[in-house]
Image (cartoon, rainbow, N blue to C red; front, side, top):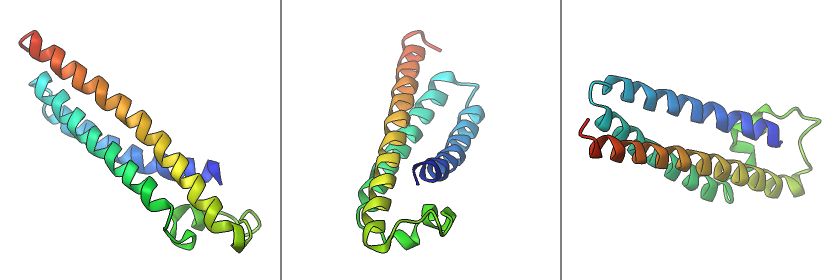
Length: 119
């Protein structure tokens, strides 16, 4: 379950990161602005991941993408499935939120650096 949760969240974060990267490339003529936009969008992405982690506690396990990718023989029993699914997804979302927030902090630091050097 953890591997599949990791893959589904990684894919979603990959698409969001691609969008953020495209915005930053579009603003590459002004590095400070590009990193500010990247930092802002990455911060939003981290908050969305935190909200998804909060939502994972109560979301029906049958309506998650992870559950759809699990083979029938890999699925836990119904009495255990809601707790297991919610726990795995919550941990995965929070892990990606942590990584995304570190990237956002790095982008904000770079934006401040470019601002200090007048670029």
